[in-house]
Length: 232
Image (cartoon, rainbow, N blue to C red; front, side, top):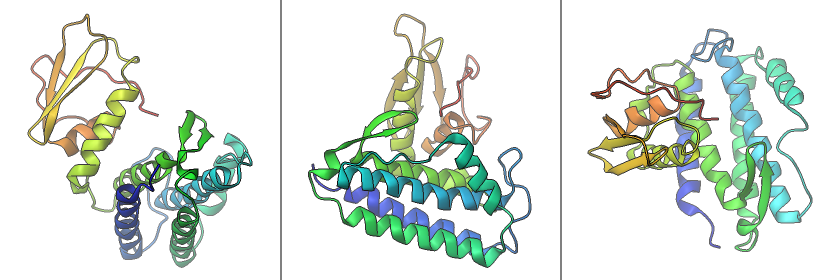
């Protein structure tokens, strides 16, 4: 399997945008768009996620099982412990952990990108890891509540995200949902024996609705927007 260069380039672009947004904030103590989290929580989480995904790279490279986090409790404790740090310390943390992610990715051979590793959502190939980081960066950039909306997400990333989430929700929705956008071919998911519910709009707004970052008020749904499960 070849290295996922497209996704790695998306990581670099998303990281640069995330860092720039954090740098422009006066401080990180204000509320984010995630309930109960300040912007500092979001920034710390993004840094710890880079470290966690590096552990999966290490697993793929060495063959030694290395989970993303020791436990859910440890993950949450690390975020709480880092959320109130000074702005400069948080920015440096995000930069250094991103650099480590990029450097660790470069160490994998073609065969190692095909190795299966484990996440709390199940087994994945190492080649999936950069895409996981892309999602993390762009969605949490919106979550910062710093003026970057879901419409800023590049179209190719938003398209892949819509298809990704539709596949993950295929067996978890009560009726078939059909997504239409001028930006891609229709995407359908859910039980085929039910009448499809049509939802249309820009690919970014569809991605925002599917991930809970938008209410869907900018989408068109003649029969009303269907209820969605949490995507993660």
